Image 1 (spheres, rainbow, N blue to C red):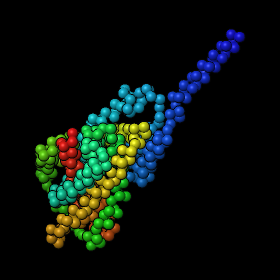
Image 2: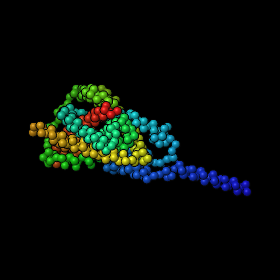
Image 3: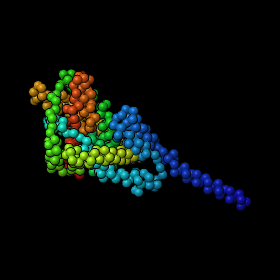
Image 4: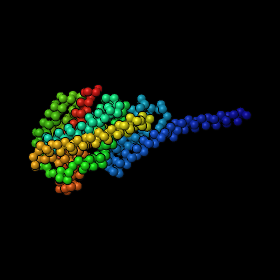
Length: 390
């Protein structure tokens, strides 16, 4: 009898341990939401690898979605929102805005502002494209979002992922995952979204406009530009210092000629590490339980609206400028799309669409002017929104 009782106790123990084990597996905690987010993550990875749409962004974000949506038993300290977990500590760089300035440092160290310096009026195209930010801000307010949330959502129109993360960390941290994913999604889809808008808003005659070759920019101009640029922009919008300061500092490292080692590290190791961490943790933050909400869906559609408005305003503003420019000095409106700061993808789109109508008309160098201006413009716009809303 005692032997039988011992066997039954042992079987009960094994059964209870097995049930406990099952409860700790992902299979016992799966929801439809997790499956949806895992599928979205796989789509991101597919687009990054197969289509080569911003692979440096979409592959880490997509894989992060897979990690973040493997369900687990609460309290194991492995989730990104659980205190004490490794992912939670890595996510501090997103939540507190550490990673975006490091990325801007690398962007500055990689960027050649010669195209902008050789034709300064192209700066206005980058400024015009920022209307997408304020258009989406207005639309978000009309849909019932709070002003701080609307400001964070609007920045998606700048097509600048690091800036979107930085401003959402300051204004609406609870919406950061949705805003970051939307911003990077539309950055990756630049070659898909922009060309139809560009063709719709331009005539055949406008698409073949030839622009004068950019003038040669001296080394002195290149060195002075980040210094003057920093003082002018940051004195007007001091809240943009974390982004603009690092952008111009990185550019000075590049152009000075005496800090090549620092410029190389900024444009390689530092920006690569920051990109990996920001992409992976942003992806992990899209847990189905916190991400799949009505607000997230609304943000995604507002992001598309913002991006369309930004592209439209850039193209239309070039057409407006051409009303006041003489023949021979006119600007090809196909470079208007590059006012959004998806560097250098939107400039490449300008060039590829232009070559569809004239295979000898290279617009890439001209488009880089408003493209790098858009980087500055989105950071300035972010600073303005922070000044008014924080």
